[in-house]
Length: 470
Image (cartoon, rainbow, N blue to C red; front, top):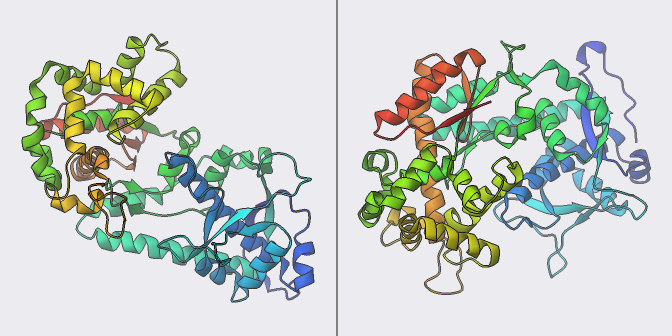
C-alpha cells in the first residue's frame, strides 16, 4: 500500500537517496500482494544493500577471500527500527519474490552470525538478469520513512561512537580526530559522479557514495592491533583525493604515508624504549630477540625498511621491473602472506618466497619464527591473541601464536600514530585525519607535519622512516 497522507511543507524532509537491486523492475509488484508500504520496502532494500556493501569489504580483507561465502549479516534490530515491527513481513515478501535468500543451518532454521543478532542473507539473481550484482538509484519521499531511517542511523552511529569515546576518556586524541572526521566532505565535483553511476556494480564508487550520503559512519579501535577504524580507512584510495575539509573546500588535501610501514615496524621491534613504554605486553619478547639486532643482515633489512626500499630490494633480486606497480604489489602481498603474517609453514609460491627471504635475511627470519613460537606462558597478557577464549583447537599444542608478529607491528604503528605523533600535531595546531599509517593534512601543513613526524620517531630513539607525499 502507498502512503496517502501528505505532511505539511514545514514538516517535510528532503528525499532520501537509496540503492536497490538493479534487477527489480517494480517494488510495488513485490509490496502490493502483501499489503505493504512501497517506500518502506525501498528503505529495507537499502539497508540490505548497505549490509552487503560492508560485508564485501570484509570479504576483501579476508585472506582466503571467502568470508561468509556469498552471505552477509543483517541486523534484525536495524530492520525493526527502520521498517517497524512488521519488518519480518517485508523480509518474507522479498524471499517470496526471489530477491533474497536466507541462509539455513542443517536443521532448516535461520543461520546467525556468531556474536551478533544478525541473520545471514544473500542476493538471488534472476536467470534473465545478465551481468554482476548491480544497484540502481531510487528515492524515498515519505516523511515517516525518511525520518525513521535518519533517526535509526543517528542512533546506531551515536551508540557506536559513544562506546569508543567512553573507552578512550583518558585519550583526548580520539575526540579530536573524530571532530576532524566530521569536518570532512567530498569536493563539489563528486556530485556529478551520480549521473555516471545510476546503475552500477562498482563497489569503490558505492563505498564513496555511502560515505557522502552519511550512510556509513563508525569510529572504533580493534583489539588486535589497536588500530583506529572509521569510514575513511575503508574508503578506496582513488576517492580519498576527493576529500576536503569543510572550512577549506577548494584545497585538495595531501597524504603523508610511511613507506613500507609494517616491515619498518618489524625492524624496530627490539627497541627497548618503544616496547617498555608503549608495548609492555611484548616486553618478555626482548631477551629472546635482542641477539638478532646486531647481525649484518638484520642491519641491512632495517636500513632498507627505513629507506622505504624493501619491496624494490626483492624485485631487483628476482629480476622484476622496478617500474611495474602490479609486480610491486605482488611482492608486498607475498612478504605479508609468506613471512610477516604467515603461519610457521607455507607452501607453493609462498614457500618459494619464504625461502628467498630466509636466504637474504636469515637473522630476521629466525627472529620472526622465534616470536611466532611463543605461547601464553611467556606472553600471558597476550593470551587472547594466542589462545582465544572459546576457540577449540584440533591439537593440544595448537594456537594462534603465528599472529604475534603482525600484532606487534600493528600495535607499534598504533602507538606511534596516536601516543607519540598525534599529540604533537594537535599541539602544533595541525588539523589531520589518520588512515592507519598515514596522515591527511592541508597542503600548506605538509612540511610542518613532516618535521613533527621525524622528530617524534627520533624522540624515542627510532630512525625516522621515509614518507611518501601525495
